Length: 180
Image 1 (cartoon, one colour):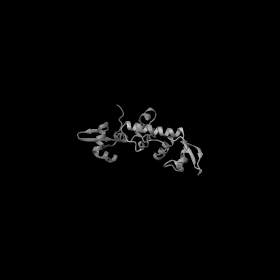
Image 2 (spheres, rainbow, N blue to C red):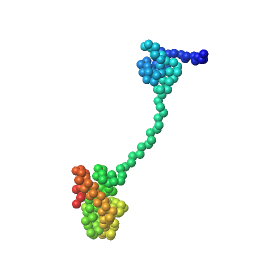
Image 3 (tube, rainbow, N blue to C red):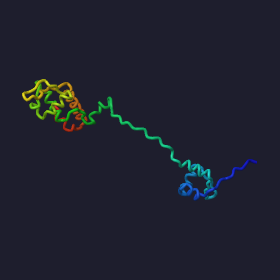
Image 4 (cartoon, rainbow, N blue to C red):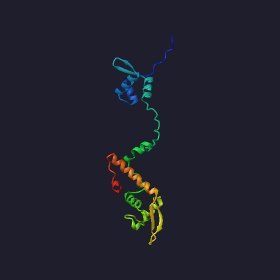
């Protein structure tokens, strides 16, 4: 004869629910799903081992920390093809673009007094960014400037963007008024 293993305490569904701090119905549902109960007629019975197994089933699995997400800006050919979808990315605003366009049509150097809507800060900014170079000084001592290739490139970028937006039926937010 095999040695008998003593049976632990047997609990009713109400007692098991009280021990696990759940409702009677919840205990029965989980126990039936995983096979951790015994049944006698309409009564469900639970051993100590069944309750431990139910507890393990109900345990929350350890969570892995979310890896940090890195947002990558669109690049490459897609960006070139779809740049018209985004705002114009230039180093100048509309007023400065008008000044650059004026300078691009001039052969002789001009001072800020000869350029409509250009002040000393605009001229200083153009010189600093390389959009214009100083050729001389006027009688008041202000620099006389001419546009550089970098300045012409800013105009070309704006023109390409305006053209793409127009091709797709989108407005250019007033930038097209500056185009020649």
